[in-house]
Structures are given as structure tokens and as C-alpha cells.
Image (cartoon, rainbow, N blue to C red; front, side):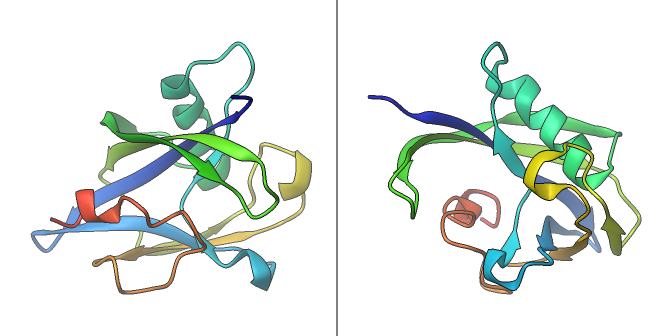
Length: 139
């Protein structure tokens, strides 16, 4: 099977004793609300890819990858098959929200993402596929 490897990061923090997950509003409305993720480079493993993507997309630098929580094959809207790797990442960020211009280039060049935290899997509607494993975070 010819697939595109994608690394997804459920960036989590504890606030007031409850777990929260970082999400962002994409400035292009059709792109919706997402979690940090991106394509794994050819010579890169998924662990290092998720670290790179979180840094490039959020601006966060002090975080710890806890573990891989899920891997699957998923068909994107364009018909491409993605081999997806979802990681749980812990951070102690004090910021409740911020805006950040991703540094990875490509389609994200010149965009500004608006970051905020959610406290349940039903708090916002994430773009298709991004919330597939939130039930493993919000237990």
C-alpha cells in the first residue's frame, strides 16, 4: 500500500486538575479547527517528525513526547491514504491562547494560527480525522 506518513500531536497540559488538549483555528475557514500535525519527511521517523511539527506549528519548545497512542491507515478527502501516527505530548504552558505564524513553510507560509485549549472531546468540532483518538486523552 502506497501511503503518506503523517505525525499528529495531542499536546496536553493539566489546568485546575483537568487535562486539556491544544487546538488551533486555521485562518482559512474551510480548514477548521485542528491539532498540530504534518507530513513525515522521507528519512525521518515519526517520533522526530512530531517534535519538529509541534515546534514549527505552535512555537512551543519545552515539551515532552509521552508516547505513541495510535497508528492507523486513513483515507483523506482527496483519496490519498495516510499512515497516521498520534502522539501524546505533555507541556506546562501557562498561556491560555496565542497566535503563531508557522515556520515550516509551504502552504502555511504567511498564515497565523490561533491556539487555545479544550477540556473535552466535544467542546469544539475538529476537522475530520483530528479528533479520532481524543477518547484516549479525555478518559
